[in-house]
Structure formats: C-alpha cells, structure tokens
Amino acid sequence: MKRDFLHITDFTADEIHETFVLAKEVKARFKGREDYKPFKDHTMAMVFAKPSARTRISFETGFFRMGGHALYLSPSDISIGEREAVKDIARVIARYNDVIMARLFSHNQVMEMAKYSTVPVINALTDYNHPCQIMADMFTILEHRGHLEDLKVVYVGDGNNIVHSWLRLAERLPFHFVCACPDGYQPDTDTFAAAKQAGISEVEVSHNPKEAVKNADIVYTDVWASMGQKSESEQRKTRFRGFQVNDELMAATGKNSLFMHCLPAERGVETTDSVIESKASIVFDEAENRMHVQNAILLKICGKV
Image (cartoon, rainbow, N blue to C red; front, side, top):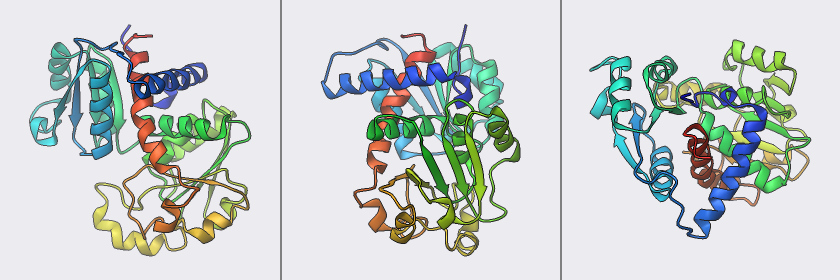
C-alpha cells in the first residue's frame, strides 16, 4: 500500500525510533562516501509553493547521493491550486515520478495531494506543521544527549507550525514540552488537546519565558513572523518583547541547556548572535540532520528498508 508522511503521527513510536536508527546508518554511509544507491533510476518531484534554501538543498542533495534524480518545481512552475487543481497535478506528477515532496502554504493542499497521488507524498512544510524538521530536531537531541529520557524542551516564540509538530511528536514519544508564547499566539487548540489527551508527554503553554525555561534541556526558537506574516513583523516585535532567546534567558535554565533554531534566523530579533554562536548552539548539526532524517523517512515510505 502507498504510504505518505504528512504528520509525525503517521509513524508509530517504534517507527520513529527505527527512523532514527536508519538516519544514523545513512549518515555514516554518507560520511564514509559509500556507494549507496537505493534510489537508482528513481525520480522525486519537489513541489514548492513556499520557497526555501534548506529544504531544497537537503532533499535534492540527499536524493541525488542515494542515486535518484530530484526535479525542482518552483512556485511559478505549477502555481498549485491556481493554474491547475491540486488533484489534477497530483495525479499527473505521480505518473512521472516515484515520490513527491511538497512544501506548501495550505495544509489542505498537501492532504489533497496525498489523497490523489498514487505515489508516496512527503510533507516538507505547510502553514500547519513541519514534520521533517522536528524529526531531525529530535534525532539531533538524541545524538547530543545519547538518550531521550527525562527530556524537557521549551519552545520560546510563536505557537506556529513548528510547535504543532512538536505537539504531534508528544503524542508518540514521552518528553516534557512547553510552548512559551505571548497571550494570543498559542498553538492550535485541537492539536494541543490531542497531545494532552494522548497522556504520553507533559505539555504546557506558558506566557512567562523565564519561568518556562527553568531546567530546560533544550531551548528552541523560530522567527516571530513566518513567511506570509511579514506584514506583521513590527507589530510582533512589540508583542514578543521579552521572548528573545538571549544569554540571560539561557542562563535562566539553571543548567547546561542546548539551543536550537530551525533557521533561517533573524539574529538580534528572536535570538541573539551570541546565543547562536555559543557552545550551547547545535543549530548547524540540526540543519545538517534534516538531510539524513529526510533520507530515512523517504527510505521508509518508499519501501526501501
């Protein structure tokens, strides 16, 4: 049966752990320059409505090094949902390719694409969630800590698509997750309720970042105004005052916490240059691991393991 990866909850807890083991193996193969070509003579269509540097580079490079060819389709190439119906383009692309990667604004569109595609679809980001990023984040935490026990992750900023994927992960793996955000910028209520109801993780929303980060193993942030929200940038700078991850906030954890950011970062806004460049920062390990974890997800949903 065709398998898609649209939400982290599309994988069971066991499958998430298996993906981390596989990512470690694929990463070692890449580092050793092994001749590893499980996707030889395969093609992947990369549909972008929302442009991105890391997403294109990581998927295209990873798929190429595994023997496949990745076809970049820019926002102007398809204009998905405008020039052509999503269900039509999904069926057409699936006739030509072995897998589809989609980075879209609308979450409904990636769901529709998966419904009508006859080949696996992997969600590379929507306005609702960013499952590949958070899978890579947790893998990076595992690399640095050696385990995932007694883990507290505190996200400081807007309750956005990154937070929704952390909450989805909290439905599968046990950890303590806190979203520290200004009032009015909480994550989706249904997603938060589902994570809480699952009873696997402790999940919270806080409006006090200094209290929230106490005993945090990971302090995580993202831009305050995502793509499509840039007109709100100045307003958000006012509303998010006090939510910047700086040296003072990192010190408030009371332990040697690690700092993460999904990038791109607006240095001097949601975080400071000193934090990104500190010994606590693992943002570039996190960025590299996008490729390795995405490769592992592709291998799983395409039946290559």
